[in-house]
Amino acid sequence: MPKTKEIKQEVVEVPSTELAQVDNTALADSPKWEEAAADILLNRLNIRGKSSEYDAGDFGDIVLAKEHVVVKDGEKAPVIVVSAVKAWREKTPFGSGERGRIARTEEERDMLVEENKALGENGHPVVPFADITMLIPHQDSCEEDGFEVPIGDNLYAIGKLDVSGKGYEQTYMKLKTFEKFNPGVSLVSKTWELYTKQEQWQNKVWWVPVFKPTKDGLASDEVMEWVKNFKSA
Image (cartoon, rainbow, N blue to C red):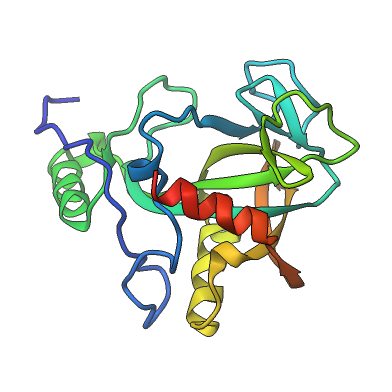
C-alpha cells in the first residue's frame, strides 16, 4: 500500500451517526475511561473463537486478558456499562496480518475514506467500531481469578470489549437506541444482560456479544459510587 498521511491516534469520544435523529452526544452520564483511567490497567475482553490464539475457556466464552473466563457461553451476566466510545477503522482482509488504521473523529474518518478511495482497488472500506468498558460481576460458574474489583459485597471484573460488525449492532447501537428512547435514564445506573450468540456464514462460525436491557435491573448504590469515583479519578 502506498504511504499515506498518518491518522492521529489521540482518543476522543465521538457521537454516533448510526441512528436517524439520534442526539449527537456521547452516551449520557457515561464516564470516559480514556480520561479517568490513565494509571489504571484495563485489560481486553475477547470472545473465544476457533481462531483465538489462547487456550482459556471454551468457544463462545468471554475471556479477560486471554486468561480468565468472566462469562460462560450460554449464560447471561448483569453488567454495568461504564463507557462506550465510537471510532472508525480500515477493514483489512481477515488473516492478512495488516492492521487497519483508526480514526477517532468524523474529520479523521473522512480523511481516511478519501485516502482509501484514492488507492482504488488497493483501498479498504472504513467501518465503525466501539470500545465498551464494563463491570462484570462474579458468577458461580467462573473462577474468581480476574474478578479483582471489590464493590460492596461482590467482586467484579473490569475490561474493555472491541465490537464491530454484528457485535457493534448488538451492543453499541442497542445502547444508543435505548438512550434515544429513554432520555431520562442514566445508562450507568442500569444493568444490561451480556451474552454471546453464535453466527454462521458459509463455512465460518463465530460468536458475537449481545446486550439486552434488564426490565428492573439497577446498579447498586456502591456500584454507582464506584463509577462516580472512577469518573473523577
